[in-house]
Length: 100
Image (cartoon, rainbow, N blue to C red; front, side, top):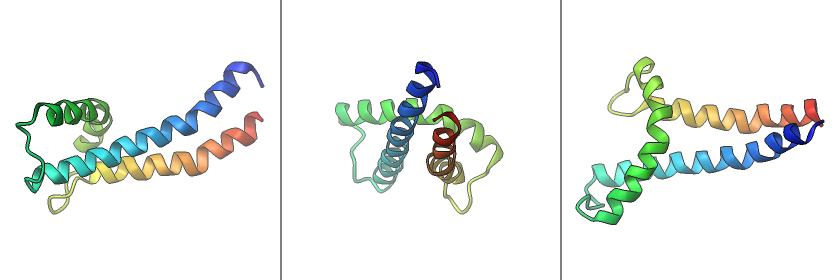
């Protein structure tokens, strides 16, 4: 296995974990905003929420075009989180086996 392959494989799992937790933060933020617990007039809150949206929306938007919301719940979010969990739980270990 080359250095580049090993670097990609060993960085893939932590990056997918970080992305998973960013999506969880996006979900929590959206709920707190919807229930008016977080005030969007606070400049720091808006900056953090916009940063999280810039990361999550490019991934969610194409899926939102295909998967409609169900009873007000964003099913695209569920598809992405389940997909990330599947990639972390199944594909990354398979890559370890193939390239190691």
